[in-house]
Image (tube, rainbow, N blue to C red):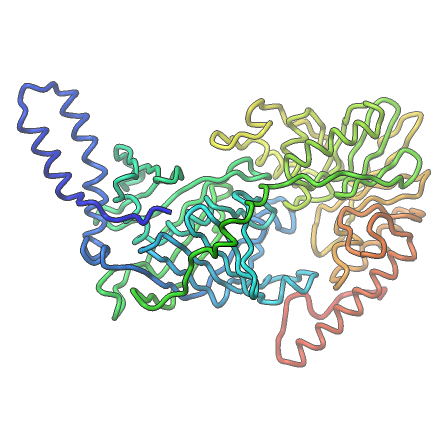
Length: 548
């Protein structure tokens, strides 16, 4: 990574001003062009002055931030339903620190995360230490004694990561940002006005692009950047700075106490950082990537797994990534496509191969959560009709309509209309060869609009998070018995989206499903009792069940 030394922007501004006004023979257009070329440097120089001056920023070899934070769970796509008004779920980021090695252009992000809602696997509540680092173009994690190189890009329902994202999180510190924008190799656009702020686009030496806004008093107001996103096509992050102070021992550098990163989808407050302290030029760890880590092959970005399948019943297959394929006389129906776009594309091709070349007509999405809708944009790009309930379909429409100009996926490259089929309590798909009933899950504490599919001839249920949300704990165990009784279903087999039981990774019998629900409820109650005994009143406790 570039070390981002400060260039003498003040001298550049004065020289540019002399060039403009000492040559009376040049055209007005030339004068405007030259003036435009010096304006961004002047804006950045003013920001440096407002933060304590060029010399103080130059003298900062490192900055360490300590505090705590909160993330919006699943980018806002983990809410109880697809409504804009639905309450957000959050992830705590405690023991948070950020180390900015300005001398060497390196970065470290450390924190311990905990889900602030019932998450059914222990890792979600373990406060496990996360140690992510960036050294130039090498992203790596420290896991105990191991240094593990990371992919250049990685998108999941929870996080975007990789070289670009880590560099942008480094640019979140305004001291790093101003230094980077002052570096000779950084290209700056002409300033523009946005809601009373002066905004400059920048391309760093490494090729990363960002925009920075500056207040009328010169201080940085925000930094903005974009990244690909499987559910949203492309997401733009804007981190706003607030609460400027100069700490004792901070060499007079002014830095913000608050960082709020918002998304350009629903204006969600994705990440909030509350600063407890800064340390400037204090001892920091050696963030250089070890030679073996640097020499290690860079892992592939968003790899596609090898696809396999098992038959579940006549004309029904479960693919190993959780999608269930149902064959009709002249088309296919998929239950769930919760995989990244490249794998979604491969899964659609694989399904057509299973179905002897028949087209995929319908996709049934079990519910609105982003881990269950990763392949939605790819399905729409291939002209597939999506089945769900009205509120969830409204969320889907929002995500489908989003452009992705900088990171185009198939839908962005060739937009298609969103074809949807609205259901209420029940929808039947039927022809001479197959019958598939789709039902609303009616009452569930995790997902209000949950739907599941049932093939009456084969007595097979297809579900996501209704039975097999997790192995360890069950916080909403009653829905399975409730819906089978209410709709009078004779379920004998279950094809799950999430494979949560190593002994039964593909298909569960009804007996096995009951064993999973009963055991998970018992384990959840034991956990609640253990935490309550310590004086910890955690979300989801006490467990509510009338059956287990």
